[in-house]
Length: 241
Image (cartoon, rainbow, N blue to C red; front, side):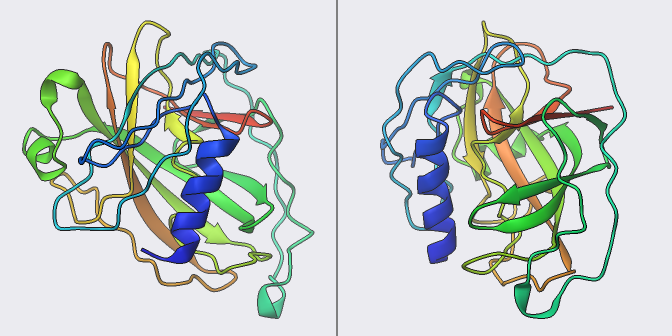
């Protein structure tokens, strides 16, 4: 795994103490909570996760008791203006960042501005239940919750400090929306293609103006989630049908 992936995962884990947890199948865990309501509030303290190196068997994500909610009322997404990205990774200052509280439909893009990854478009395409064959492939126990795939696209708009890749969105910030009585686990990007179309993302750098696809997997108890949230505790954006 690239140094950028290690850096991002470690930063994300500290930044969202109280978000969804990730752990390797060898027992290293990090428990965090997802916020209730539009303003997230952490309910537990998380230790920085230990990221295992990619292997032929999938790491089982850590468990956390989380709560998150999003209003069903849909509003129009923020408008963005497109322009040619400057060469050499220069930051695109003509694309408007999507504001906190924006509600989008699956397939619509939000513009994210990150200190390390620069500015990029994040388009959540769907949240889908994984087939039964995926649990063994991901080394997950089905009794701990149902497995879901969040599929998304990213477009590099420039400004990344260490190179931009498909897994730029922090796996702890991008997550299914579920009830406070339920539990969720974040698996992140798989180290191998999983049944049902959650494929391993390329760690090759994406040039400014170029796009790539990726998938993160999660395990959630209770009712099937129908919404996906990008929640940094400063900006909350929700996608739904």
